[in-house]
Length: 228
Image 1 (tube, helix red, strand yellow):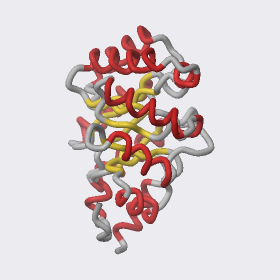
Image 2 (spheres, rainbow, N blue to C red; image 1 turned 90 degrees about the vertical axis):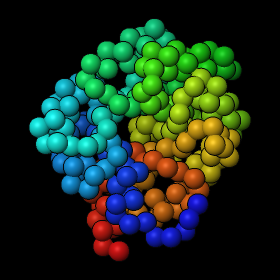
Image 3 (cartoon, rainbow, N blue to C red; image 1 turned 120 degrees about the horizontal axis):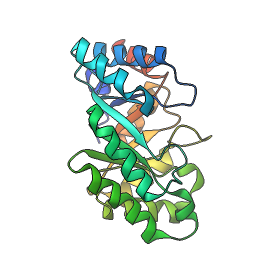
Image 4 (cartoon, one colour; image 1 turned 45 degrees about the horizontal axis):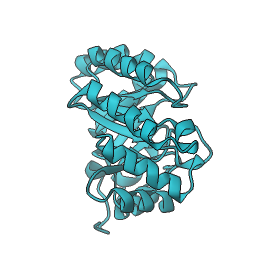
């Protein structure tokens, strides 16, 4: 990847501004939507209960950002049937992209076919909508990250994502580089969990990351890019 400095427009085009913590509030959803509109960020992700609000804001303000929703979040341990029903139910809110939490328990149990089938079922349910799969790197060694990334590709998802942001670690330089090595051109890499400044964004872009999930750090990262 290019080592040229990223301008604010380029940075914004890679940001999924995300209010997906248990403590995320209506005020934060409104604030993040305004940030996305101001800077033309790629997407805004919110907890499902705020999807109607986010769609309303986008419509009223003429926002161009994509609407994003998590599925099976944050634990990933729901049944496949429940995840499918969940994803389908969000389509009525004009969701453009889905971030699916992988079944970590299955993965740690060596149930790799079940992991893949879980991903494929959700992808089949949402059709041509974009599916990113959160593999939650914090719990995985290299072998399990490899299995997870391969399941993302064989399951038909377009992106592999490092984490939920709910664990102590997630997006490290080592994790993103390894995931990109595994998926190659068969999937794209989204970094989330610990991306808090422009320097990190720059280095991860050089390692092959094409999208970033950020919460409260979005405003700071964009301000840093704007000041260059």
